[in-house]
Image (tube, rainbow, N blue to C red; front, side):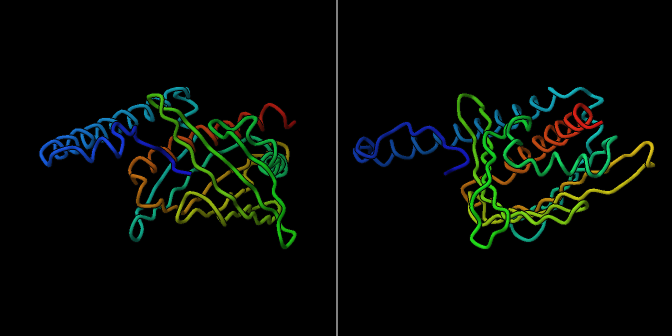
Length: 220
């Protein structure tokens, strides 16, 4: 599964009849189309972030770091006025995550050969009538109630692994959980790194805000 596909304007048969000048012109036109699409997608990602209120956007702190090659380390953090246990319960509701996480179209437990926790997730967004989607199969590592690690064993990335980290703040009477999401990611060469990084950062703002809203609404 590819994370996005550009429209194929010409069939293989028709392009075989082109002269070299026509082929060069077509190649230039398609390259321009790709650049236009990249620009439009970037604008759409930025516009998507505006769906969150200014106050909600300020709740999520994002950082990214360029590592070796095409690897990126992305971190997102939010504070939730609920206990560690309440937030943990939401994160580990694996089959229910797609019901409230934006752009997550599927989240399902799969059989694990060693009896562990294996999860299939599919995320999707639509820009300019083109669907961007990615599938990952993750092995989860639970260290209740402070860390929920994950590592891709199958999927559309070269590398996709990290952890949710929960830190207790506040008091027993007024608990606060600091929730951090740490991701190490490397897309395949077919995926533009700048677009993937922007896409992930935008999604993380929405996802962490959705988790906070879920915790506040349902955990008492």
